Image (tube, rainbow, N blue to C red; front, side):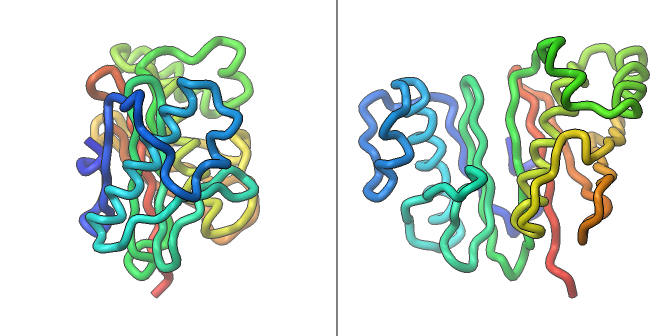
Length: 214
């Protein structure tokens, strides 16, 4: 599924179920030491997907630890992203010489809780959502916008090392092309970040890729 959203240099691996008996990969014990059973299983599966993607890239499997912003720490020379939601786990990786950063996110295709919407949208975003609800009412655009901003952040942080809040990006969405553009509202090296989305199998998937400066 993610292959449809990402260029060839990016490798992906996905899973729709967990193995309840899966052992923790050596070196990742701290990631799940205090996790509830369900959370533990999704973390282990998502990290297994990361190693499968690394192997598809021709790299050896390795523990994928967590940085101070909860970002995955990849082996040297690799960039990547991990996502998981109910019924879906995935990871994508690429060589740093091919791709500067990549961000992916998966969400259930369901409306956002009402209390969340105001915290993740700008006034312009809410105008956009109102228009899309009229012209394309079959998509939960609020959840898609949330997912797109998550993917934008995951691709932004490795390049900038800086936090990007939901209010720091305004989105345009093209429902005909299945694409979106985030207009970054704070100073930084990236003023626009574009991505693609897919709504399939009860899921919303979004992906953003940035390329190295030439």
